[in-house]
Image 1 (cartoon, rainbow, N blue to C red):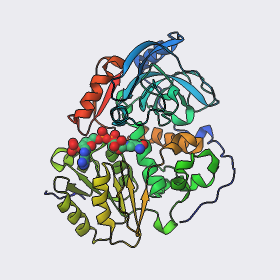
Image 2 (cartoon, protein in one colour):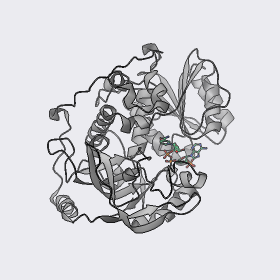
Image 3 (cartoon, rainbow, N blue to C red):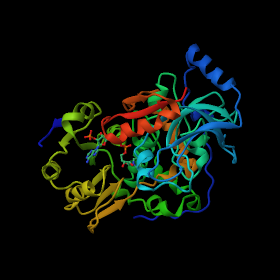
Image 4 (cartoon, rainbow, N blue to C red):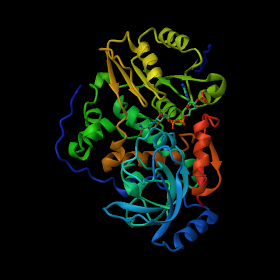
Length: 420
Ligand SMILES: NC(=O)c1ccc[n+]([C@@H]2O[C@H](COP(=O)([O-])OP(=O)(O)OC[C@H]3O[C@@H](n4cnc5c(N)ncnc54)[C@H](OP(=O)(O)O)[C@@H]3O)[C@@H](O)[C@H]2O)c1
């Protein structure tokens, strides 16, 4: 399998349709947690919920977060919402980049934080998949709703955005997984059109098909194009195709690689091979290409794929997306997804993609299918969770933990802040 290398449109028309919820039998049956964990969950659950809580506020760009003790506990406002007592927070680059570069702050003061695990304490449907007392992981992609932010003791989410954590999965490590999982699934399953239901080990959702049943008006206008201009069947990435990932050692890259391998893709990983090669091989990379010499990396990808590469994902930035573009230049029809920028000068043979992250929280049908699959993947241990570094100090330790992340010294690992 692993060759270590080195050196160096079809438009989908949509009408208003309602999706039937899956039958409870379709849900993964999770094992009962060990008694000691049950007791801890019960004690957390039985502690009274006060009106006010501790939260981290950002008052202005380029300022550190400030800890306050009198922020209102967020209220449940809509059907399907639940209140979660936060147990651990996974830090994402956007948590420091947003304040540093003044984006992702809908108003001020604001609360940030995109990944959390916690205990469901209020609002759940007693006959639903997610119930009071469950330990869940929540990718909080709806950052414009301050109630859903992770940097507070209690957060709101919807049941369709919460995955129950199996008792065999470390809840701290699970706090590092959510946003990366959502990003990986949407990039592969929507932007590149991978049919995840064809995975033998554990079929996931065929999101292109799911979207045919989703009311277009549910989806924010700015991501509709990405969601509803799915590729022709012949254009969808499928088992046996090559996929290049630049920035494969990012948490998002690690998860994308694993899902791509489950689906039978051949994956080229561009990363610092000396630092991350062993891990990437362990996760199934078919070809490692070192990132230190980008020119050589482009030549290697072109050579190995006979200049016929059609699918590539860049998880680093515009410069590396532009390098990847060169590896796609000779294909009749190719697809390039950029997480943090796309080339300035597009090529005609390439369809360019941005990740439609808002789809996860704006379509309950899509969100529910994704978290149900995630529960199954965790339960059956088909996905390795990211390695984590645990930061101390609770909410008060977040500023220091973000500095750690920003310094790059924890490369390849997620920083997780414990609140319990
Ligand atoms: N739009 C969205 O919703 C969304 C969702 C998820 C992620 N993202 C974006 O995707 C990017 C990655 O996020 P993440 O959370 O997965 O990152 P992460 O886990 O924090 O990434 C850290 C890794 O990035 C690698 N890296 C840094 N510079 C690199 C370069 N020039 N070439 C290759 N690898 C490099 C580092 O490798 P070394 O050890 O070699 O330095 C390190 O292993 C961020 O820009 C993030 O904002 C966006």
